[in-house]
Image (cartoon, rainbow, N blue to C red; front, top):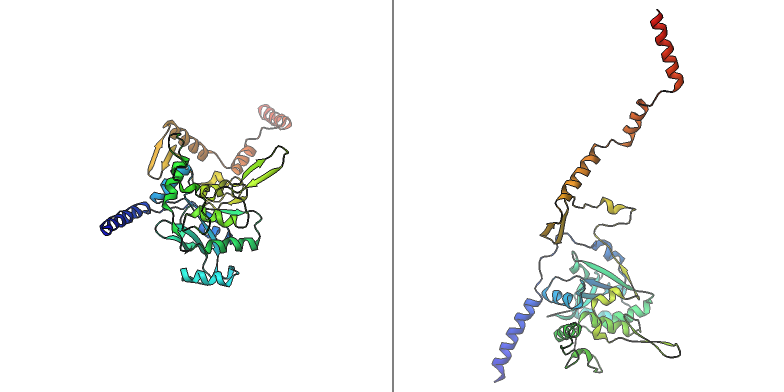
Length: 328
């Protein structure tokens, strides 16, 4: 009797996953310089992604952050010291020896390995753990790789939304997977939780809970990994944020040379723009016209030399010359 029910359930689930994982169009102009970013990466770095899928939009709304997804950069195969770990990667990925690899948890796919190239054109940010040793970075990577094959925990997204909604009447802890305390290897996970547990395995903090007793002694407690979201890596004081915008501002005052629109147009998003004050258009246009009419500095100097006022001695000589002409 369960067979028809299971078939309907699987059909509904497949449709739901297809809708949740549907991605909109990739931005024509990326916000990140992917080539600079990929050369900067080190094994153990966390990368944040501004996702475009429907489930990403849900996560962004719940966490009030643009970062909906995170993944761990594990480097190339030769960057991984443990030969057993390299063999395990080979079971889940047919990758080239010099290919840059990441590990992530995705809805419908679970915890898998992908080439970094997959995220070319996306808005990315590097979060680098401060002072993490090479040995501990390898331990973090090994922990993450041994989560390969773990399913994605969809229930987590719903429980996180329930927990973060600011309404007292929504039950936050009742039958919530966020507060389960099960020992052993989890059977399901999500991107940020998997990485939080990987860093916790070497006692590296992300957003620890701090407590000071009556004697002034400070103690640090590990925060529940299920309450860690991608944006926590961005705001954590223990991670350095590294950005590579498509338009770099390394040069002094180069921001003044950026290709800003000069017509007073503001945009909510691509294709959704408006003009706040139409008089700004006239002011900007007038200002630009006046700037165009202004002479270069060299021309101003030449003009100043031609129209330089005469000295008193020159005027006296000229007056004497005029008197002589009149007498003749």
